[in-house]
Image: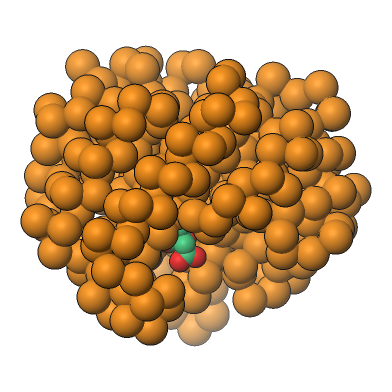
Length: 380
Ligand code: HCA
Ligand code: CU
């Protein structure tokens, strides 16, 4: 089962820097990387050293930070970019070139033959310079490229015998899980190399596509914290963890899960955004149960309506009361938490009272508590 040996490449410090409100200082990059390392991320991808002097200095800073995670940088398929990247002492190079007709025309103007020649030149050059570096070759806009073009490029690159990994990129978030599965499965079967998936979320499939890639045999998946990246971003780390956890908890046992809420909080603060209410695991309502039917069952056994255990992430569930859907079982639970033992008839009457009041205005918890206290006095 490929899922037994996958790694996450977190690209918050590369793809994430392409998010509209992201601009991290050196200290912030070190903080993000440190927390990712505490989480147990295997690889951290950083912006090309060619982007700016600070970008280059920051790669050196992270390489020297003593992290367990391997530090990668993402460069164009250029010999000069590769030389600058190698000079930083980085552990790996992620090299990319566009192969879709649109990018071949408007991005670099090269034909498939020229792409193959350039890739051969740059990749063999890098391998000669750095025999031990982790070397990845990826096509940009894989899913709008012609399949025959892709296979020619990937097989030519694999034949060089110098790369560790091939990458496929859903650059515009257009792919469906079955397309991702089919492409990854072919590459694994035809080349025997490690395969990485990088997927954007423009049409909401980034997590499903990453999961399909892993099921097809991909060894590496790209994420960013909260999913930040170009436009509306890529596969979010927390979402991928939620997806894998619910397939089999053992798949994520290697990660320090309670660090996840701190990662999401950190990036939200640094980017000046909110964590979406609907976010996987860390959204404000991810573990709130409301309707009476749900709260009754969750109080009996949380597994009835929870596939993720909040406590595994250092979080807790909340059972809401004080609204028109409030059930009397949830009120009993709250009463017990306050040390009050109310009989069933009292609790049922109270639930009706709360529903009537909440039709006018939802009640705050302290208001419900006051009603419970008052009912306890009347009852005794
Ligand atoms: C981009 C490049 C990239 C690269 C992905 C990769 C993409 O368009 O900014 O190297 O795997 O989405 O294609 O992020
Ligand atoms: Cu991308």
